[in-house]
Length: 430
Image (tube, rainbow, N blue to C red; front, side):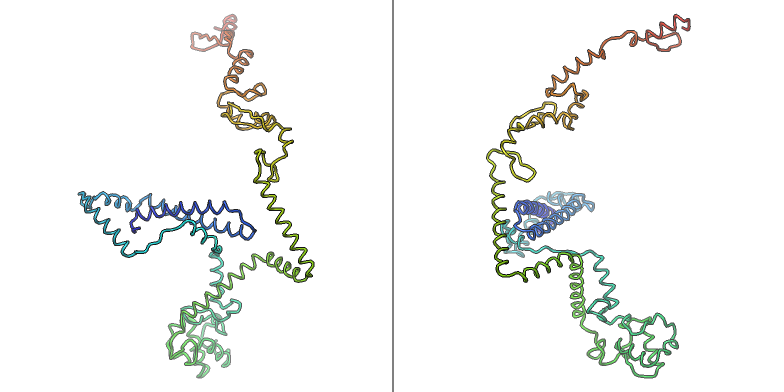
């Protein structure tokens, strides 16, 4: 509605919930082909990325490092900067803001979830390239090395000095440049759009200027009237045209990168097309009938997977197991284990195996009872505790043993058990 921070926060929460519902709705729809499944994965990934980005913004709002949220909440209560409270003034200010918003947006549309989902299904996946591809393209574009766009690399609407016929980095003085000859100097000047007339010295001086001075900063008197750099009496070329050329070259470069990544898929597609073109009419009809039969079989399998009135467990192939196998393993018998938190185990085999699994071991540790073979088939907590007490009594763990547990102290404060104290006393050591 309005552009206040609280309204932006509410709108962000609404967007997150809306995207979550769209993700669930999209994942509930079973794709009919591999292409649709791929598109579905791209759509879900894009929505999840949007959710993460919006959530990060919400976290920044709730952290409120600049106290903007705190101030706005205080303003809603009518608190002014001086500390006084004026509720009615705050109310009418907010009402004025809402009316102003609806005056500027009189025909605001209400989002329809069904229509929004239908539009989402029509969207093609948006593929973003990493910065490495664009950085590599920039280097090649400035150097004029893009295939089909040679000598098109422009900087601020002018031809780069690197496109000269001569590499000026190898020449440090005008005299060295004069040794190239008048024809080479003329070609280099023409490539840069500069005047090509004059003596060899004048040509060399004019060309040497471009080594340390960008072309856009050179005096217009050095440019030829017919050059594209000084079109229309020295005016620079259209920057929009240069940007359009660069954008087209970038798109071509991205398409080339995609083709390099999908080389194997493209080759397989070409082979498949060539194979279909080589088929006779009878072979094409036979292949079409085979595909229809296979599609009918898959649809029948799907119906069988859904139809499971006996609620039989699913096998490794995604189909219900046979009923005789269900009865053989006794999967209709339910075994509950109180030690495992009243967890249910179906079938004798699963019940016997669970005594060695983590859930039962964790329950025994919570009872301070060792999980030994003595406690197999014990599922009640009371029975397990009673059995552990009987085992302790049988092993004498809780029996009073005065010879070992009764303590004596000598004159120096040393502590001995009864047996050790008696032996030392008999020897006269105490």
